[in-house]
Length: 376
Image 1 (cartoon, helix red, strand yellow):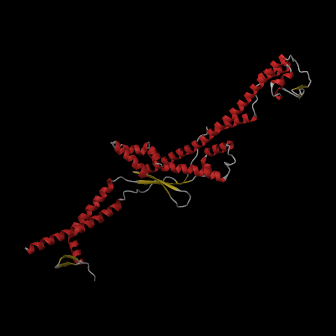
Image 2: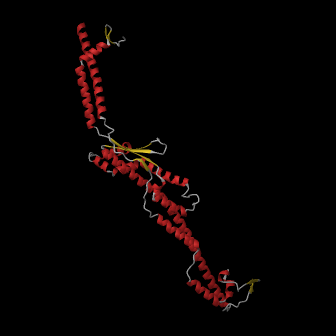
Image 3: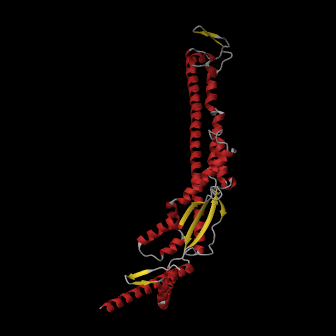
């Protein structure tokens, strides 16, 4: 049999059987130290803060889960200048919409600022504040809860862009309720973000249409003013030329033959030829033009209608979801920390090891003292 040997000095060798005998003689001391170690472990387990972990798993939403956002997007695409490139029925466009909303949610969930903003007003954080008195401790607690307790991790289990969101609290109920409320809070914030981006595009389109409509209106009004001014000038010339009525004859002016029978006020380019229609006719036409409403182009009214419909899109209620659950926030059935049984076993093992070392060390000291007295 191979024996382990520990050399005390040049003249004495102790076998493993001797060690076992030494440990057996000190078994009560070992037992006491092991019990003390187990007691310390249990004491620590009952005093350390418990940790219950609630978990949820999310994936990108179905297209119908986007709710009112999809309706507003469809409405905007009908009036977009790039409608041929932004067809809402195109599968690539739908995939882009879903991906953008989900990506916004993931960024929101992982944002430290967003975590702190939510936790600062959460019921669980307010309960924890009652245990603290100093401002530094309160601030440290908020940072630790945001960075350590509230986490989001990509799972890569099914290659479905899946993420696991978790939260650790002192009770199972607090963990589940806080996680559920945080996901809901982040979803609303992400949904508002994608809606605000779309509202920005809608407002830009409204501004463009308003500018175009204003340009058409200005052109029509200015044209009317120009025609009225031309008629007034023609009437003044007709008075000077004493042309009261239209004679029905064609006239040659500046070597150019003017067909008066087939002409009207709108067909004359200036008052120099228009006066030939006669003062009476021109005056009647001026009165008719000044009293009649301005008729704007059809495009002008179409733009006003588009602006009205676009403004209605801004009033849509923001109802929808930027994700889908594959696992709702769970109610943990067992706490993560502390594991009391495991800690008890670790305490007993550590106590047993320290007890053995204590017995061996004490025996070695005793023998060295005996040898020293013998040599004297």
